[in-house]
Length: 263
Image 1 (cartoon, helix red, strand yellow):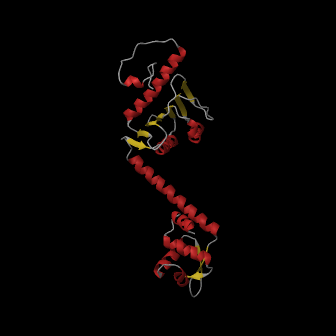
Image 2: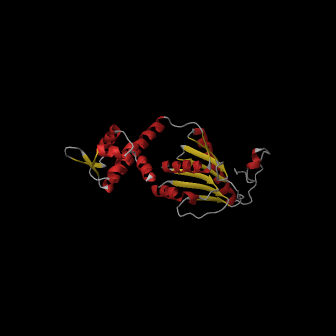
Image 3: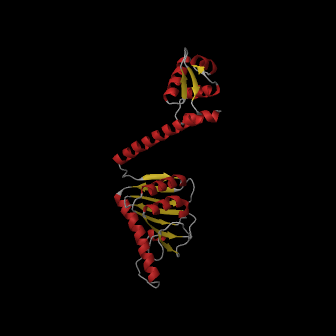
């Protein structure tokens, strides 16, 4: 019974409304005075709850000298609650999106934890309309549903991948670098519609780190990084003996592949 009470509260009923509604379900053709004797509520709270339940169509009123109530058919009642709940959720979503659009996020948002990163990445996928660039060693089957939806929408998905090789049920333009070593951690650079980006690295646990932004400079830098990785890969695939002494012997190059493109 306690779980049922919580479920009804989560659907938008006040605690008093839940108690009164459950009492009416168990006691056919009852009035406010009788209900107040069975539930731990003062009479004014009972009558207010009855009024609310009646307005929401969850109970029916039987006319007479004293107002008596009976529960609406349960399928009808719960469908009313479902419809009302979904309508409120849809309205809240529209209003929140309007607030976000009114104050476009230009700052960097720091994300901690793989679950939070995954949620942010899925949100980016949901907003993508034209092009998606990815640089990653992750198994994209983890996001098969989201990426399949993008393919169905006609979004162009370009992926520079390294590490283990995976097979996908959706169509992407994949540029696989077989020469990069397999890492224990995950890396993901993502640029969507050349308007927002996400960068992340680490082991897929609570300490996984990611940064999200719509800041134009960072978006362009990540997009350039992914493009350059593909350019270098195509060059070395077409000209295996290509050699160009461009290294600078810097700290940064300790994280760069011998061919010259970013690791």
